[in-house]
Length: 467
Image 1 (cartoon, one colour):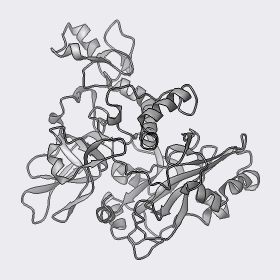
Image 2 (cartoon, one colour; image 1 turned 90 degrees about the vertical axis):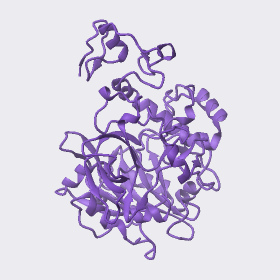
Image 3 (tube, one colour; image 1 turned 45 degrees about the vertical axis):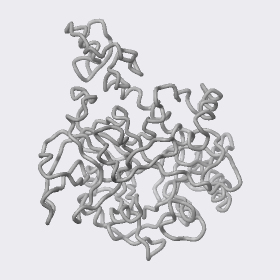
Image 4 (cartoon, one colour; image 1 turned 180 degrees about the vertical axis):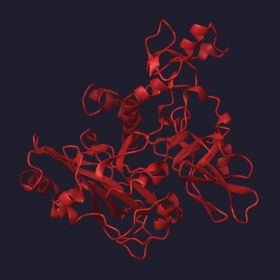
């Protein structure tokens, strides 16, 4: 980072200037004719182009945590409460820790905002191009660890592109995505309508995502972006989320407390470097297609929290997560563990996380009766505990542990799960495998540190279950 070269500006930047306005001031350049339509940057207030939310990458990265919380709240609460009721909730909770005072619904077309922190659209470079047997018109492009079927000759190795991941909801009123309309259109709970990118198979080749030339997106400033930089917000891409089943909806206490970690696992296609960490201890577990749940106790306050992915739910008859908590007597057992379990002396918070699955959830792909819980994480005061430190009752509810060798390549990781049968329903396909490291975080060669877990999802399963 260095100082912006505009003498009147004190911002830090990775480029020569922190914003377009600073560059214009120094070089005595004028903005294009559309400058009267410019709007202020959402972070620093500098004037920016009309299709931009931020004037620079620095501002976008600075604002990311607060914007992520706002998007997640909007995604989970609007479908259950409606926009008007959600605005009232914000007004009532403004300044409280529950929402951090960071939520905002006053921007134009807020319902078009992406509802998660997942990078759905990124700047990438085509890494490989390979022919597809018996296919003259199409070929396979490798983007990071993803394979995408593209038209022959459209791309060359080294081309800069925009890559859209599966689960992206793309607005087909945008001429660049209009060709997807004939392949199906869906509308989510917030009213966003478009085509959802799903796993496909063409001439025997799986294809996941969409690749388009970077040149088709003039609103993306090439000078501010590098490989794998996120342009989800810039392009208005929204994550597709299926409607929430009635058994999982309920009255909301607030947002998931910050000391309860998220349950997301990254796909191996996005963190290929973790495959080089085969010298560490990894445990393969079955990935179950359900909905995540977190049960947490706080020794100091005595509070018990039952949370979905992002929401803290009030106890309510008919809610599956609370029913699971009651059936397993989770609150009493977690509080007892804080008092008596070896290694938890002095611990104030304990969080049990796992997958709820069965009837009424995700179409019940394992064809089970009733609703079930399988634990995959135990977190004490923010530290993820290795399985060796889990109490016996938690181990008894664990997701199935599999007998697999740690893969060396993405291809091997995906081959392991392609036809894998579920340990829970042996006549059904498993969704995939989650690999968990004995270390909570793993250092990558780049110097960054990532969570010590990743998932490989079966393309065959995704195709069969329309995921």
